[in-house]
Image (cartoon, rainbow, N blue to C red; front, top):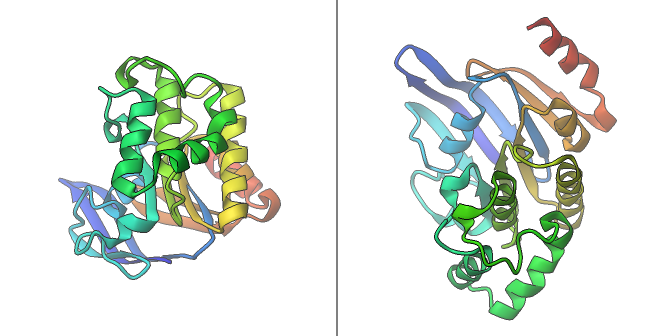
Amino acid sequence: MISISNLKKQFGETIACDIPSLAINDGDILGLVGNNGAGKTTLFRIMLDLLKPDNGQLTINGINPAESEDWKQTTGAYLDDGFLIDYLTPDEYFAFLGKISGISQQEMLSRLTYFEKFAGGEVFGQKKLIRNLSAGNKQKVGIISAMVSHPQVVILDEPFNFLDPSSQNHLKSLITDYHAETGATILISSHNLQHTIDISTRITLLESGRILKDLPNDSGSCKEELTNYFDEK
């Protein structure tokens, strides 16, 4: 479980995060939605100890990321291409991830086959450095790197960005299949409301760092309410 209590972050006069209480349950696929400046990325950066809150506490399975690195053993994340080592090829990068995660080369190659359809023949076995890949293929490398260690918590910020329509559909299947097979807790922020509704079991709407709605999403049940909200903005 991810637990948030009295979490606050402010940049000057701008409130980026003000969440009195939020519990993200084991096995949730939580979609974070909101317009630009809603605070989605800020919340993720606090979760990953990339940004210190001004006040309050956040824990992942009882661990405060600001106080211990044990949460990293069960968490995979990709926010942007700053997470990548761009002077490596994708294959070199995945081999490096295997070494630091204690995954053998043979096991890593086996795990990567799970992502072949999503990779689309444009990531594995390529000689290009990551820095020279298209934005979409960098996105694929990042998403695969977040999931290949089989984490129980997956955090993805705008994962549909830069992907072509086929790759977006493959990603939706990848996320829902991974969730079905592992029971992982998956957090996704996205401006693509339809994709988020398609895959999420629960959707939290943020505005100016605050939670406006926290909705169950059984078979797309919150689509009308969220569509009406954004139509009125």
